[in-house]
Length: 388
Image 1 (tube, rainbow, N blue to C red):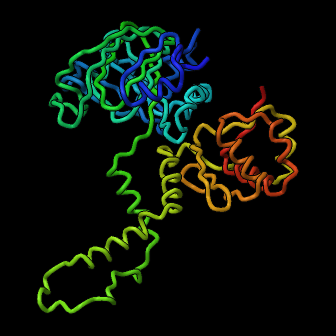
Image 2: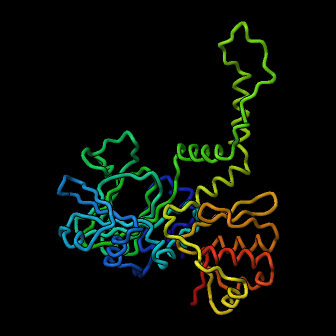
Image 3: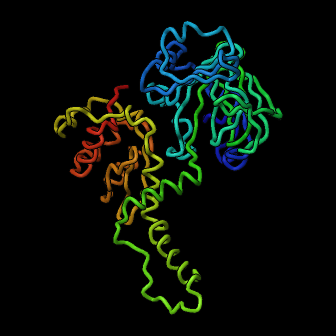
């Protein structure tokens, strides 16, 4: 049974994904949150965690925003109601929460961003707003009442006097109260507003959706970084221009177009850049390679002792096909160029699932090329062992 309830994955993708909201009751039956409010508050005190507090009735005005890290005094002075604590990328801190992402394999994993966790007492909300990306809202604890409205955009009127993009007006088209285990899917740009009815926690599974400006800008930066000063506009086939010397003719534009096509429309280069861009970590300080690198004879015994090989919560994986095999990309870097059939098969196995049973790797452990790849992935701390 998948998290979409009675709706098939094909139906969801064709009728709901990026098209209209969907409420799934009991998407996670008997759900027990792997993190409690005290854990979340403790995480919000960490220097490396991205956290925020939102007050509907702030001391300095409505919808006041404060950024963490926070202190015990900050939490001790909170009002009884009408505030929300938000912590980004909690899945990178809590392995059990990272496992929740396994339920969303029907969307490319490189599109997944992170799981934001929010806690709010009665009345807590972040206000009516819209996001530029898809989000699945999982009710983890307590009750939250959700209202959904039509699509909004940058021209929609916002409340003034706050850093937050709160909609000044929101027409409510649907509304529901979510219980623990329920899930609400909101497509990009659909207005929505959730208000806590009691102490409640919500998990927001967000997806990466780079803007066209972001794609063009980063791709251009990437291409420019690999060009040299010797690569110049040239017109050795130029014709006499005495009649109209100020004219930029079509031949000149074609030369510029050819330059752009040569560097910006190369399929292999585009695949490499996009894989690196979409796997780039937003929180690079959370990931570190092993301090003391292992040798294969030190690593190999663990494959018979442990039950699973796990992708590190701080790592983002993807791969793309090349003319000779595949390139495995992790956290914005090419981790390996797999060309042998065994290498390719193993890399796909490790990349496509967060947990890989060690027994499924037995056939690869005697292959020298596979040993080197595994050793590198463990030394870079992209993989670790876990017992059942």
